[in-house]
Image (cartoon, rainbow, N blue to C red; front, side):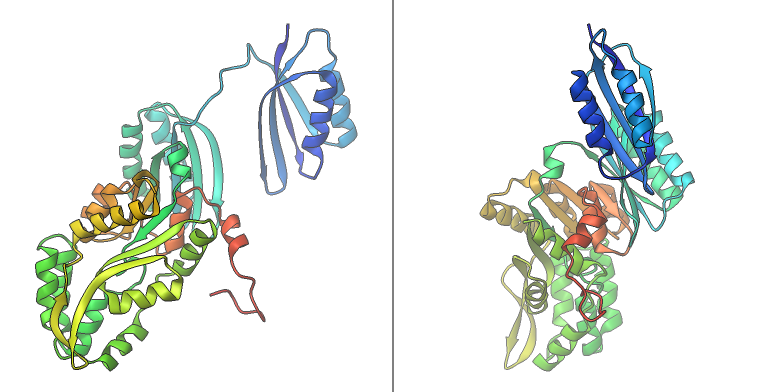
Length: 396
């Protein structure tokens, strides 16, 4: 009859430690039930759960091997090999810094809801700090609710997602443009050129907060832009600023084989140029009517409002043969709410409170590529896909 033993190994990490241990265990004819390993600052912590046949000198062999190889080892006899423990929930913590107070509050909220932390992995140290925490058991609704309070108290973002294939198999990311993919509200830039900035901006704020109908507000603002010429539009194009991390975000998704799309309540004369520049697969936006090289103040075709955004997301997913649960939607305003709701994962990015309340999760750091960490992608993996700098210049 086999005796179940937990083997704990520690010491400075170097190549060959795990391989050497496995050679000893194989020679002893033991069963391997579980293995977990982590390296922190070059220091190895390795745990092995094994079944040792009666009469075998496995512990003696392991002690001798550890002495020869120069690492620490100890043993604990356990009652029996426990059933395999699965992770039910994944908690992602993101912030400019995640100190012990914030981390402790997260862990405390998980424990209070009956959850047990099975694993912790650091995903990034820059441009933000992020960790992924695997949780088994507990009341997932309470975990989510309590962690929202922790996030507010400690200035971090906390995302709670069910663990499973759907989380790891996202295939399409659909983004809003204004104040999401780019830092600006383009209609406000156009309003500056037309000399109606304050008037239009007041309507924009009310529309994005969901206080007035988006389509009605958009048409009212566009009427005030009548007369702007093509040279002015080009001047506005050059003023549009991508959100920090936007290029890295799109480039990483593409290199992972994921499809990307942008669906905007803005205007295709700008959105199409952004899509071309970034290599985005699909782009949909409103069309401004022009006559004689000047804006007429009217929109051609149906307005891309909140319902239309959700419909377009569904159309793109269907055309690509991608189930909705494998779609990520990212947006910031009331016009994005339905789009976020139909996607498998809806992310509110630096969003208004009304949007954060209905999204699956939110990100409030000013880096679009931080969303990659919600998908379990490590910063090291992102860096491996980034272009190699040329002549000392950083990648763009």
